[in-house]
Amino acid sequence: MKAAILVRHGESEANVRQIITCDINGYPLTARGSRQAEFAARQLAGLRVSRLLTSPVQRAVETAAIIAKHTGLVPEIEAGITESGMGPYNNAHMSGLPPGSREELGMETWESHVSRFREVLDSLESTTILVSHGMPIRAAISSYLGLDEVESFGIEIRNASISVIDLDSSTVLSVGSLLISQRIRNLLK
Image (cartoon, rainbow, N blue to C red):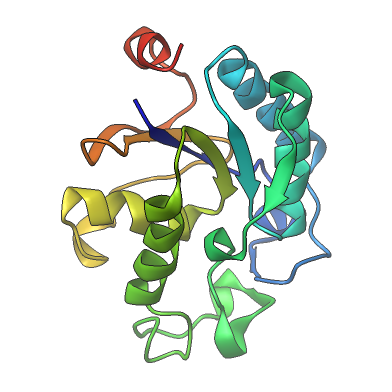
């Protein structure tokens, strides 16, 4: 089976401060975020995975480095799975966002998230871990489930959670879990 294992980065300074940001640097993992990434990495250890891709954003790169220690994989930067473009609201506090759609606010559109993430997934030739961010992961998963942005609002992608997509059958196997089930573990061994 060829699978995409989507991992959201651990808790970062931006999460704690409730800042939305697509900056490459400046918001590292918190101590809690590092522990979350360690837990996720232990879940991924021993699985048959050939690549580890990461968003270029610091919090994702730091999470991927922790995963690398447990899997022996070398992280590769992949711009197609980067954080959402925040437009004029980059580095804004979440409470300062006015009402309106992402498009109305000049942020990256849902369709852009789906397109760029699916392009990466469609190019994969083997089971791969992809360390990314909440919105891009939700968009990718939703595209396999046939859901649009509004229909997917209930999907929660927690920090350091793991979602798995069987790329051969285009089937979502898990969403936002902190554990890899035995069924999925058996498929990926």
